[in-house]
Length: 296
Ligand code: NAD
Image (cartoon, rainbow, N blue to C red; front, side, top):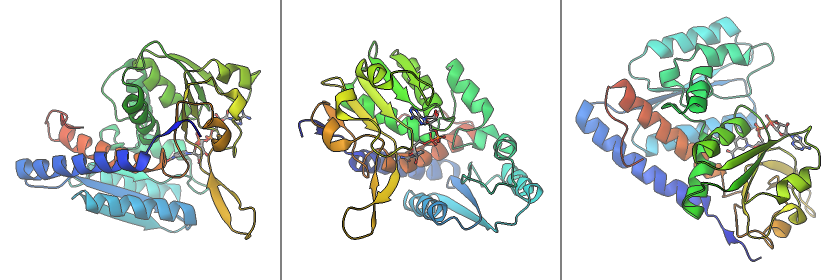
């Protein structure tokens, strides 16, 4: 391996430490702690793990957590009703609805019901539009985390050629918007892109957000490129019948060519929760009429 390993855990810890300081200052100033409400519908085990770790991190940062666990059979109307109550609750600065929702619920309708000022996932069309037009927004946590790692690694990314593989509203599209905002030259590749390896070979920065285990091979990577692997894929382990996590990039191959690369796990993943905490404390400041905290 010749690439530097980008340590997402350390970067996330640093952000979480700074968030905790900002939370303490906010409490001194306003007499209350920022609050994050999480909503989990159903019993999907992976979603339950995510929501639990978000709740734990909220407490560790000195914020209030309000956890709402609803059964799989919850109707869309009941869920919308809860969102409305949380929108009206002054203790709540951030509302996170864990995705995916059960099939009988219209996810877009639920996201649109969240007060954009409390939309700490940054999925509401108002926040997506604000990000695209360069206004202050709440920015989706995972791509925001990727940008943080890139800036830490490269300093300025102005003028760099960046290829984002994946065009989801959660990762790919907001990632592209953030990179354009930093004056990179951005290509968004997706399932219909022709000659994907050739497209990726042009990139100084590769962001893989596909959901296909080890799809991006080492010979797709331009020597010296920085590779950010968003993918989290569970695959069977070779020997013991257990599973292991791999990214969307064939790590061992890419690490021989890239200048820096994120591992899976321990790369982008930890940044997602750190940015959620960051968004919540920023939302609390904006809702209280305070300027955004300088430290974040
Ligand atoms: P998604 O399924 O919504 O989108 C996948 C995208 O990949 C689509 O836009 C599709 O066009 C593109 N794609 C599919 N097959 C392709 C192919 N053969 N070639 C090129 N492009 C192709 O997924 P998502 O929600 O954006 O997530 C992507 C990955 O990131 C998943 O592995 C997911 O688990 C992971 N993820 C990680 C975090 C984190 O915290 N690290 C957060 C969100 C998502």
